[in-house]
Each structure stands twice: as structure tokens, then as C-alpha cells.
Image 1 (cartoon, rainbow, N blue to C red):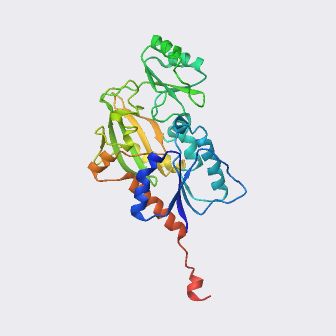
Image 2: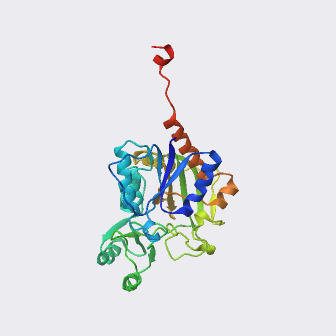
Image 3: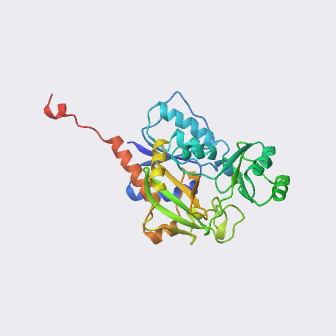
Length: 322
């Protein structure tokens, strides 16, 4: 029997998906990729593979999980196994530079950004953009390394701090701060490459970072609001926006089947997309109020793909006895 194979490195994020599979009766297995040995002489198992590797995996002491996943995806590709969120999706997940360049090809505006490779280039980049700026890591997740810098003096103070941990790939992003008239951002969810719903995320409860990248880690005692109840997330009924169709074309062109894409609107009404999450999670409280389930939609989609894979075609010649 073929299975859905879920590639990941964080058990907590997979729990809702496990429950959704159980409700469907979907045969599935998990590949927890942290470290190990990949025997390239063998063949992968049969089934559909769903990649949920996270850009923040290194923050959970899984330093080479993304690299390991990259090797596995190459192996799966060689053997023709169907993968949801394949090699290109992983490349975008671990690099906002790559995300921004890919988004721009579909006329999707992103914040003005300069990539500083090496800490000593941050000041010049900030001076070129003008203050205030956001400094953050190219490969991040969880709001890692995001800092709102209001002035040149504040930047010097920030850079002088010993605890200012550098990005794992050596690349900082210096970004123009997007001032929003209202304290919220919008996250648009897609399953099977198609729009599922949009959620409005309230950022008014105090933040030091850019509201477009605040992960709210440890908010109300929870490790992540995407997997714990919170009233800061509200699914928008009847959401319509010109970006949705552009997002769908972007996802199709980059082999991304499942994702959450976030944007913020400035005082002039301009929308700026700043993050693509290919290991998307959902807020259970908001979904319960709206009567929807992102993880159930994913389970349904993956189950349908598995059923297509397992379907045995009936040839006309067989029917006719030829």
C-alpha cells in the first residue's frame, strides 16, 4: 500500500495533520529529518511526499535538517516520486532573497530591501534606505533576528550588542519599514495551489519588531500562536484581493502546493508581500470560530493525490478482450 509521507522536523506542528489523516483514514508515515544516512543506492518508498521543512529548523537544534531535506528531495526527484512543495519550494523557504526575486516576477510588490552579506555592511545599507529600517535574517522563521531600527544611533547600539546573533547563512536583510495605518497584517492560505482563506493578524498588543514579521513567540505562555488559542487571529469572511490570483500563479510556477503568504498595507493603500511560508500552520481558535480547517483541507488534498496515484487504469483493449 502506498502512503502519504510527511517530511518535517517539528512534532508539534504535525499533530493537527495527524488527527486530520486519522479522520480520513489516510495511510501516512512521517520522515523526521534531522540527521542520519541517506543510502542513494536504494529507491524511495511508493507514495506521495509532502515537504514541511522549516526555515527555522536550525533554531530547534536541527542545524542541517533543511540541507538533509534538500538531499532527500533530489533523491525523490530522480526516482519520479510525486512531491508537494518540492525542491524549488525548499529553496524559497530558506531564503527571503529568493522569495522576493520570485515574487517580483509576478508583479507582486515587496519591501525595498538590501541584502548585507557580512555584518559590517549593514550600516551602509541602512543609510542608503533611510531610517527607520527593519533588520532581519535572510533564513529565519519565528520572527528570528527581526529588529526595528529607528535611527543611526540605534543601529550602532544594536550592532554593538554581543547578543545580536547573526543569521545562519551569513546574510542580513536591511528593509524599509512599512508603516501601516492599522495594526494588522494579512496572511493568505493556499492548499493545492488554490486560495483557501485569509486571516487577519492583530499586531496591536505591543511589538518591538516590524508588525509584518512578529511571530509572537511565547505570547500568553504559548510556544506559537499558530498551534494555540489566540484572539489575535480572525479569518476574513468573503476575502477578495487582486493579489490572490497573482499568488496562485506564483505558487504554480514555483512548484508550491501548500503555503501561507503574508502582506501588509501601508498608509497609501499599497500592499507589500514580505513572507512566503511553505510549512504553513493554522490558528485553531480562529478556524473553530469560522468553521474551517486548514489541516483537514491539506489531508483531503494529499489523500486525493494518493488515490490518483494508486488508481489502476482500465484500458479499452482489456475491456474489449484484445
